[in-house]
Image (cartoon, one colour):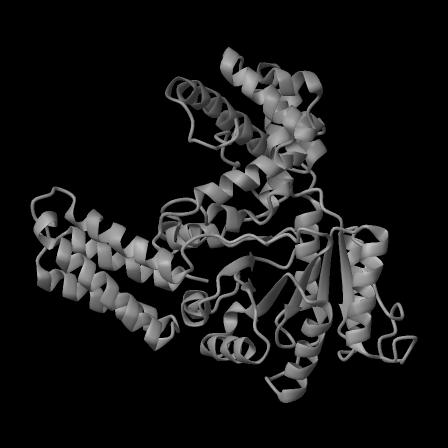
Amino acid sequence: MFESLTSRFSRAFSSLRSRGKISSSDIETTCEEIRQALLESDVALSVVEDFITDIRQKSLAALPTLQSGSNQANAIFEIVNSSLIEILGGQARRVRFAKNPPTVIMLAGLQGAGKTTLAGKLAKFYADQGNTPLLVASDLQRPNAVTQLQVVGESVNVPVFAPEPGNAETSGIYGGDPVKVAKAGIEFAKSKQYNMVIVDTAGRLGVDEDLMKQASDIRDAVNPDEILFVVDAMMGQDAVRTSQAFLDGVGFDGVVLTKLDGDARGGAALSIASMTKRPIMFASTGEKLHEFDIFYPERMASRILGLGDVATLAEQAKKAFDTDTSAKIEAKFVSGEDFTLEDFLEQLQAMSKMGNMSKILGMLPGAGQMKKQIENFDESEIVRTKAIVQSMTPAERREPKLLNGSRRARIALGSGRKVSDVNNLVDRFSAAQKMMKQVRNGGMPAGMPPGMGMPALPKVNKPINKKKSKSGNPAKRALEQGQ
């Protein structure tokens, strides 16, 4: 979402670094470049002006000290980074759990913001931490909203309290009253000892009195511990206006940004926290139910400034790598034992669990400079590479030196690839083994699970052309096609 903004920031600081000794006019020029970048990214004008005033004052005040230092541009960079973190909310804010369970979380927002899917993501997030959430279907207005929540709940293995399963349009025992449903859901959670309740409410296409009244009535009925305003990050300036209307009409404790993986300019993320004085607590970064996490202002600022997000990358890697696999790889790493293609296969399988590889690569520092390569990354390469390794015998995976010509031909045929693809993988793996020995001597990035420095995926060609070769020998034919 922030590619354009990141690019503009990078150009501004690149220009600043090239000037050597920094003057007040250099600071003014940089501030104006940043101001234009923020406005073009749809950040609210008042937020932009406050931000620019802040970094200008701090930079000019520090100018005498900066001019005697050797890293003047970096010092300005740190000022901008610090101010950016502040307008994003300062620090991450967690959900406040009730002293007497259940903790009640109410979701509010416009129709189409993604509340129902977000309810499932939030439930999964806390269920994975050992909590026992219950989803309550209080959206009785939108057709099939109850059914959708039930499907989402089933997919994350979280129960759903609904008035009439799959039939929200009829009256039922609650008379079609979302307030009664919400209250009954809380009582049900208490009786069954669920420690968290997530109440999904109805939305509208726009802010109106009926929407505000219904949300307010549910709020008063269930007395939630947290009210989360769910907003589509692609809305731009409308997101700020809508959030302010909800804040005035219903009130909320925190913001959840959805569709943060979209291609909009991202101004909402930089405006809402500053304008409403409410923290962004969570962010949804994709359509899949696991693509959801706590919003960390410092990590988002790091991404915007082109520094990547290694902390989130490390966390995702730790989740993907099970304890036994990590322990085994770490033991090999410490002992000096060579990594094998079996280890590589386990890592490929773990990488598949981490989600979209383009997003993962986008978290690396300097990813903005590799935008085209990242966008053109072929996700199916992982599948094709796994097919090659899985076509090997256990002995071949443990000892690649066994892979002579006939074995490589058999593997190529078994995986539907060319022998050149197999050769490419083995060659890259051998180079990676040497690299790992060097890394072992030099250490690894803090927080990065063992083995994350394993070989880059091979460049895999198109599937084998099944046309008959002049040779009748399968192994020889494969070798002819691949070499």
